[in-house]
Amino acid sequence: MRTLTLVQSAQPDVLAIDAASGVIPRRDRTLVVDVWYPARPAAGAKPEVYHAALPSEPPNRPAEFDVPGIAVRGATPQRGAHALVIVSHGYSNATAALSWLTENLASKGYVVAAIRHEDPPITDRSRSAEVWVRRPLDIGFVARELGQRFAGEGLVDPARVALVGYSMGGYGVLTSAGAEIDPTSAFVAGIPGRLLDGYAHGASGRAEVAVPGLRAVVAIAPAGGGLGVFGAGGLGALTAPLLLIAGDCDRTVDYSTGARAFFEQARQAPRYLLTYRNGGHNLGLAPLPAAMRDRLWDLDWFEDPVWRKERIVAINLHFITAFLDRFVRDEQDRASYLDGLTTESAAGVWPPERVGAWDAVSPGTGGITVWKGFQRRHAEGLEWRHAPAEPAHR
Image (tube, rainbow, N blue to C red; front, side):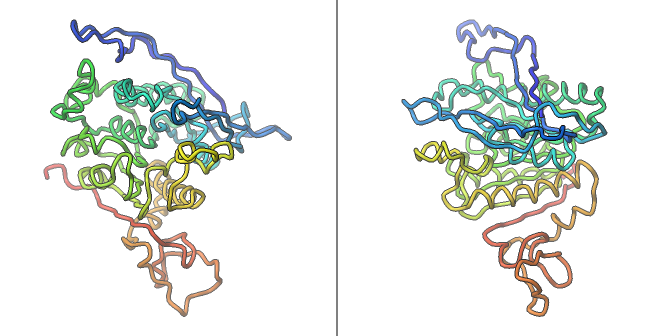
């Protein structure tokens, strides 16, 4: 892995807008991006240990933590036409807490770039407008910049790009993928300078957030639904294959107006929805670091009240890998992991005469309808929905 610094010039300074005059000041925006890639590490090279901090409950200082990695900083890249995955974290999150995903995808042959958005603290909501405006801009800029740069280095195929976002990052990747902001929303109208209007249908700002070569989008517990950011029709403009992952007890961004509604509205995209029954919002970050165990606030950044995080990570990686392999790398055999699954995971049947070993893994064939790749008696508590793209004239 390596870390890059990118500068996007003359960006609108959301929080410095003069309400009286409407003048929008501009400043250069610096973005740090962590990049993971297939590599040839030197013998004896030590893997990276990631260090980061997340806002803690006021008045406590930010809580610092470490995440041990498997990547080697500065290792020689394995060059080739790899697919590029842009990852956007949640509000006030850190890329270190997404290494469960970034390292894993790189080990499977993807180049993965996770943006450090440098959000204001989530504990200070007076500055949240900056986050809503900047997320799609950051994603579009980094995708275009790195697509060109890495293609020139012989590292990626710029025509094979995917977006993955968690929470606020989920809102960001949906917007960059084509979902349109609803300018009639009261929340959208309240953003300084009406800067979110630039992501509405036909607005000039759409070009600034667009991602060339986009093949697929993954949104984990995406934000925006409960605030009516996309309205009733904004997701209808999205055409890239879409995987939504959410818990139906999400108290942060709401499931019914969020991921569940987005799935129904994105009718022009082939789409999937993985739902964790009784799962909450915290589906996107790594298993709990030891340093975050002392306060419930800190623990709740990482852990779900019901689901084991190790299991969440394994399930997420299973479906994200199959989805990206199929739609970004055109590996059509991955369709058997995605299509034709029983809606209720527990409804899958393992015929008595086909029991086999206790830890047998379902092939999804031969009368075994347990979800392919899941172990016997371990496909529980999940829901899977799939819908094909509908003709545009509808």
